[in-house]
Amino acid sequence: MTTPPRLPTTADHPEVTPQGVGFLLGVAHRARRRAWEVSLVDLNLTAPQAALLRLITAQPGLGIRQLARTLGTDPMNALRVATSLVDLGLCESRRDLEDARRRPFFPTDKGSHLASEIARRADCVERELIDTLGPESYARLLSNLQALVDLDRAKPTKGTGSEIP
Image 1 (spheres, helix red, strand yellow):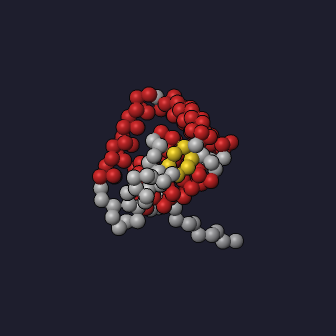
Image 2 (image 1 turned 60 degrees about the vertical axis):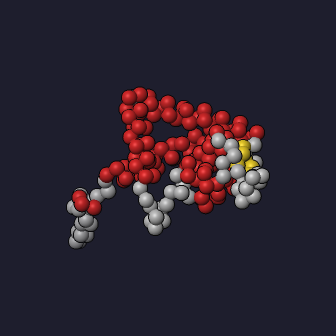
Image 3 (image 1 turned 120 degrees about the vertical axis):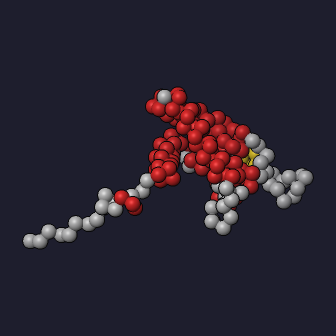
């Protein structure tokens, strides 16, 4: 009976072990998104749908490019999510009387009510995070994340496939 050869692990190659801000942000993002989506399950919404509905409700009349830019995503993805919200009767796009090419989005009454419930739940999730981290650490984390977003938005990204409009 021979012992199978030991497979190499990341401990054998620390230079390839995932680490750093980008890696940890990805892990944290996926964990927070899973937790957030659990709180949305009874509403039959995904996290992107909830975010876009809240934005459309908070800033009615934005076009798809403005919505995408605000959410830090591409216009095609924002349009796909917006279309799903329209199909659910939560928002509508209207013709812009000043620019026929634009189709700004507006919440329906049903969408506005649902956005209020989403906001309430988001506040509960954030409160849980504040209670876990402490108010000062939470505020510092928010500030540092905003600085990172601002830094990345200031950098040109043309040709990478991840352009922020």
